[in-house]
Length: 113
Length: 113
Figure 1: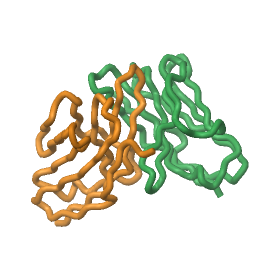
Figure 2: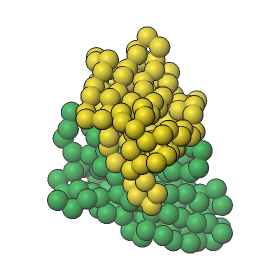
Figure 3: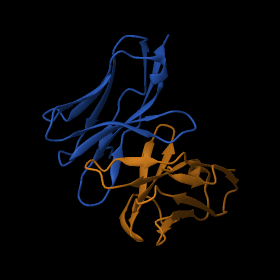
Figure 4: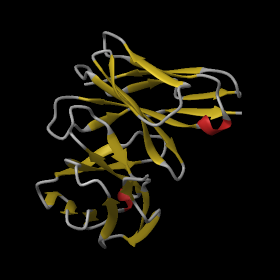
């Protein structure tokens, strides 16, 4: 069973640009969530999608957005990039387990110059 | 407001000894608590979880203890092995129908051979 796949793995952007990250969940998983990891801040919840609907959103500015397609693949977009957006962006999918265990991808490391 | 806190950013333990990682939380409405392990350049992987109605869960060398009155949980690794060296995140989940996890900031464990 293939795991969660995130692309691209690494990317470098400059301030003011925008970026789109992609996530393919484990087959059969309908919930996809996104997290931002920065040193000292742990994993900060961005948003969660289920069946193409955003069910929950974290405390991030409107520059951060996402969407989910009918095949459960998800994208997140960050517009007008700032230096502070440099981070590892992790996508996770969830299946039907009692604890709602998250299965993470390897992440997309974004560097903003 | 950090609802889940890991106050020790790092911990060093000798191989074969016990590693104890701690986590405190503020919201008594959390239903599940989970521990994730993260190696560099990889996504976090699920380690062990505990329901809020239990006080202990064990899986091989890993045991999680939950003290609801103190709003505290801990992860015990016995015996510790060099391969356990990683960053450990605790996470809390309020199973309100959406998978919005609150993560701590992580503890970097180093097991010395």
